[in-house]
Length: 299
Image (tube, rainbow, N blue to C red; front, side):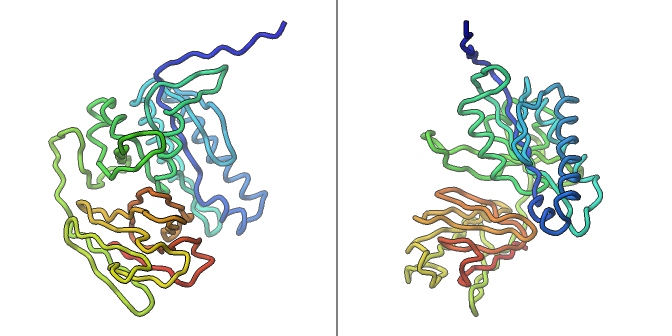
């Protein structure tokens, strides 16, 4: 007699941790060295998960999916993961890092696996994180205890398929001494920095520095920055300053490709992305396929 798997629903915090720059390592150091280095990273992620009382649900390539009984446990594990990976010595010219995203909510548990909207959103959050960054949802911040809640800073909101309202994002700051914008009415109100955005395209340079000062990029003549790429939409994307951040939002048909220096290329489809330091924006196709890229500098 075959026993059908039974499903149960429970509130869980789901965390995804992705080892970044591993592809570059395989290219530069070779399969054996890269595989050993990635295995060390995955072991650090596993140990941090178990030390915080969680469990590794599965490992998918260079990514770990873990489940925790509380948001605080996931936050503790995430901070330990980042610290452990950062302490590793570089392998050749490559310095591996980890991107982490976690979200709390109901999940469907079947045997040892978990499914549902909470899992899908946590997976989206790790895609929003940069190397060395921990991203969670504003909803999950509300479930954190006061110690971890004071180490969060608000970011921006993203549209998520199947949700009527945008999902607010926050960063969990794990390094001591970083400036924070504390959420949930915390006492450490952060002051906005004098952030400056510089965009370079061909022989043109544009500077933005004021709060809520946005610029549109696209093929249409009325855009603040007109690009000649045939794959670009007329109103392709906008960049807006929010506090000390510059946030790019895609409005296009073909998507916006953003490459931060030292990181992998990210494809945005009607989504938002926080620009940091230095990188490139390609409209409608990967950066490697076009010379019509916009270079950005966030000072």
